[in-house]
Image (tube, rainbow, N blue to C red):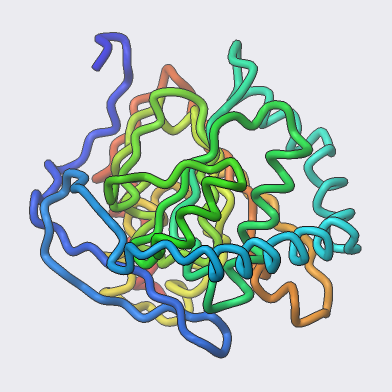
Length: 288
């Protein structure tokens, strides 16, 4: 850690924190949570289903091509692109890039591409962004339920599949776009926890569930358990600029509803005190 880096003070992380693995299911593509006790550091990963079936690979690739074509010609995608080109968002992207010409994209929690359409829609949007924007560099993907066949298709589409489960704790040593559609709040919290330092947060763009929505949920339900699983997420709201995206009524795009761009604008000369911020968060959750 550089001497000049400002540190966001917080308690030492518990080396045996709970980790939640996100699994898709039918319906509204909500996730079940499988909780295990694992060390905080990343650990090696290989698909449970390591078989690579050429027939399955070909069929999945065809589905992805159809999905990308449909998405690219949609009203949703046109609105999405227009939104990114507005000064509100483009200026933030330029700020995060700084002197760099590209930023990497890290995709977490994409789900099963073979079994469900929503993950294919979400991945299609990421691939189209890579195609349209010169500032997006390498694309890395991880979900613990990916199969060997799905990993091969991802590689064909120009992505790299991570061989370790980072548990969402990738530190942004360089400008990074984290693409995390409909992940669990705990995964966002892990990411923020790992980057709870001013210089790291300022290198992050996060495209995922609305933080404002989480804050409203906690305010309404005042769930202490929910607050404890989202502490970094809720604390980060005080220096997060959020821009929602516009979806259309077509059920096909439910895979992308309630999604927002999040930019962390933290003054490099300010040392944020996590404890004090959480006192404010806790007090907000207790008020009527």
